[in-house]
Image (cartoon, rainbow, N blue to C red):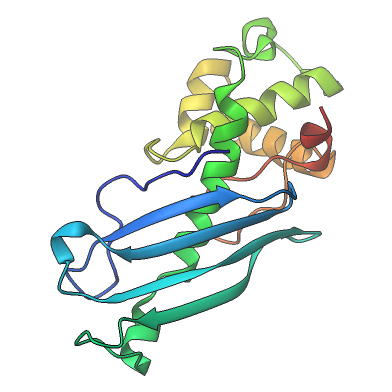
Length: 194
């Protein structure tokens, strides 16, 4: 996986400071690193944050964070700075980048989206795989909110049905665990095995 920059707008909560974020894979497919720092136009800021994210049985988790500053610069590591660092947002970008990398290699429309007929849909492995891929594509970085609504239109089914399908894809191992209160997912063990 190549390093990825965040789209414009990753901003520290309660400040005007925008961050530049790099996300990289390591030799292990279950270990990712990140590094963030104030964007170029914020050059008077002299701190940076970096750390490790690991895939666990409960999904991706931040396992190490380091914050440092330029010893000759004006910034220091303070409680205020630590509270402003958006660890959850950084983790969301890592999760999205992992999913987007997988989605980049996929065909345009999952076959199941084209083959859904009226009535009860059989929850075959192929169908759940395609639902998982469609969901990953719709929740990738840069996609607007409302993934289940877009999938409801694509499949011609109510949003609640789409949520049920996504939950079933998680249960069957096609999608990884969800982050409470956040849309999106990471590839599940069955999808990563392919």
